Image (cartoon, rainbow, N blue to C red):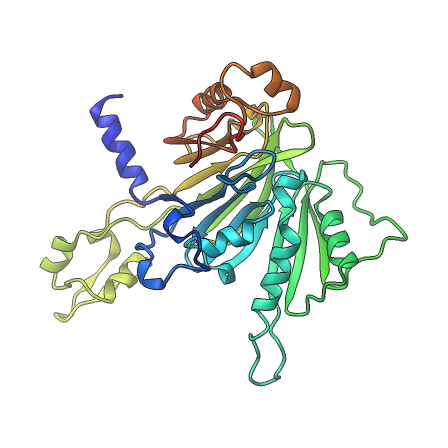
Length: 360
């Protein structure tokens, strides 16, 4: 790769941190605040990269995208909660959970996660009513996720009065959303459906738009219905030319926040400083593409194009392509092939089988 290209890659990744559970803190329940690195505003934490089952070196599948004041979890295999306690992620900031498919190694940790979030919100009391302010928790995934969560919480007689849980299922166009009769529904659980649209010949689920970030999903080929997700930050304000602003009589300070918000600022000399006088062009938002289990991720080519980071499974080593296809998984070479068509800045080959990988 040319030096210029390498420099550009370094610049793009400088503000998107990648990390995993630090071994130095493997026996700690949480990291002291003083040990946390400076937050970049968009961070990916690999919580579990084991394929099929956990091992002594790798936990079951899970990944967290940390955003300002919130954390979004992607897959929730068994042991995910324990991994979060060991990481830089704060459990209480978890507000949305995205599941790629309904195999156990990707969702068996979900019921415990929901119950823990409920317990941690018990102290959120409204001073005027003396009642708990329910915290909304959203779960997203393909059909079957609601049935699993409903069964697990109902059979275990879980009381979730401190949270409000909505399971959003990413369903096909012709999906019948009529609930089956005779099925006992958990009183603290709601169900919603998201139908896809056709974009450039591909299916796309517009999962959410919270004003700062968007999440969309696309189909993956696996032994069961599986989806991949793309998290994209909306364009960020341009950088302030500090020297130019200072020359106009505005040194660094709290008024810079107004400029970044697109507001003009009144200067001490009576003039007005407009944002376009000292600010550069808007910066492209950061983008992460997260694939679940798949033997073919071509359905994500358009949606995941030019991501800063592509997380793609590589369950088996190169040379085991026939076995991988039979099982609905990818080899390291297959992950590289699909990545070439998506053109990410960085490819992370995750979800590796302990049968061929070294301890990490």
